[in-house]
Length: 123
Image 1 (cartoon, one colour):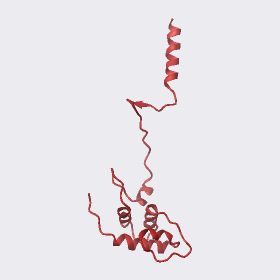
Image 2: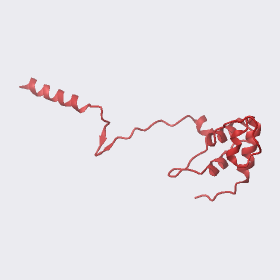
Image 3: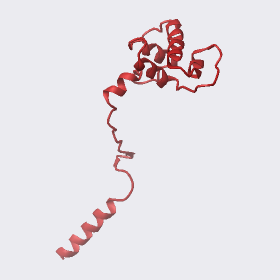
Image 4: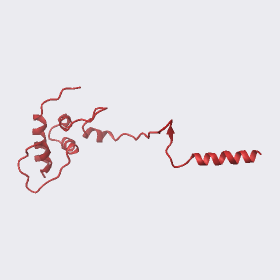
């Protein structure tokens, strides 16, 4: 009799380990992923909790990084990834800065637009 109870309990535990994710009530259990390294966080523009930032706010956040450095350019490139063209014309907007092939030109272009954006109110 004890052997039969043990067999039933063992088979019940095997069925409980199906491929569905663990549940808490009627919702799946959320898996928390580890945060990135501090170096990656320093180059990316900080995002507020709750709502996503606008491109203008993320570009202005890059101004806090030392001017003329690769880190500031990496921050701008994280907001707007580069897509170089052979001979870009003068940039009409901040999105056109990604077309400059040379890093110095791209950095100067982003700096010009980011500095000319009016300061957004802190909310």
